[in-house]
Structures are given as structure tokens and as C-alpha cells.
Amino acid sequence: PSRRQHHVGTTKLLHIQFLYTMGFSRYVEVGRVVLINYGPDAGKLATVIDIVDQNKCLVEGPEEITGVKRQVISYRRIALTDLTVNIQRSARAKSLKAAWKEGDTLAKWEGSQWAKKLASKKTRAGLSDFDRFKVMVAKKQKSRIIAQKMKELKA
Image 1 (cartoon, helix red, strand yellow):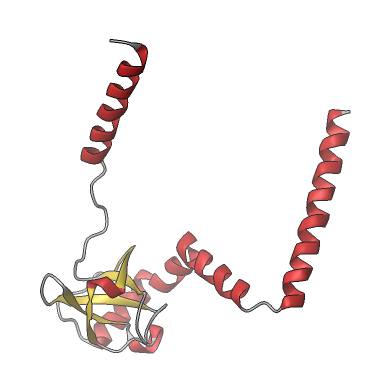
Image 2 (tube, rainbow, N blue to C red):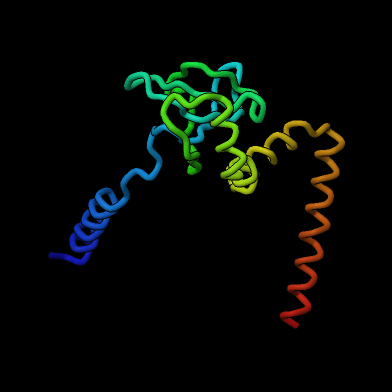
């Protein structure tokens, strides 16, 4: 076989190996922390309390911490996070709140890259025209300083 055919063959093999080794790591399970991405509670965290069927699950905030009331929600409206909370199926609000406090779930979420990215998007969206102008000027100054230092290092 030619060099190109060999390369294409190994690429396909690597792709197939990748598909088999890279399984899912986030499952819809009782205690999974989810981010609601659509509807009135969009942008809020919730916990899967029970699984209704293959399309819906029962979630709750806890309401005192995240502001999400107990409700049935479609899987299309949620995004699974890496976080889980140790609770029983159909847990009461009190035990759910205790599990969140025990696992320090909110602090773990705020420390994640996903949460930081959402926060930066929110602050960028809230900038005025003059704020965006100031950011642009600061970026220009920063790049000018970096270029100057690089020039000094090369000399």
C-alpha cells in the first residue's frame, strides 16, 4: 500500500479505538447535578431526584440554595455536570439541602471552568459601549508591552 493509504487506514483505526474507549462519563442518575439551559429556570443548577421515563426526570434545586422548585423536566432542557450528590431516590428537600451542604456542591460548581465561562459571558453581556472600548484599549496596551518585552529578549 502507498504511504497515503497506510495513513488513512491508521487514522480510521485510531478513530474506531477512540469511539470504543471514550464512553460516557456523565449519566442521568439520582443525585446528578444538572444545569437547566432552557425555560424559566435557565442558568440555574438543580439535582435529579427521580427518573420519570426515558424523556423526563424529577429535579429540585434545593430551592433555598439554587431557587429551583421541584418539577418534572425534559432531558432536552438540562445539561449534565460532573457533580453528583449522595441522596436517596425521591429525597425530601431537607435531606437534599443537607447533602448539598455536606458535599460543598455550590463551591465545587463555582470553581469549575464551566461556571467561570458562564460568569465571564454574563459580565461581557452587561458591558456598555464605553466599557467595551476600555477593554479594547487595555488589550492593545497589553499586546504592545508584550511585543516590546519580546523584542528586548531577542536583542
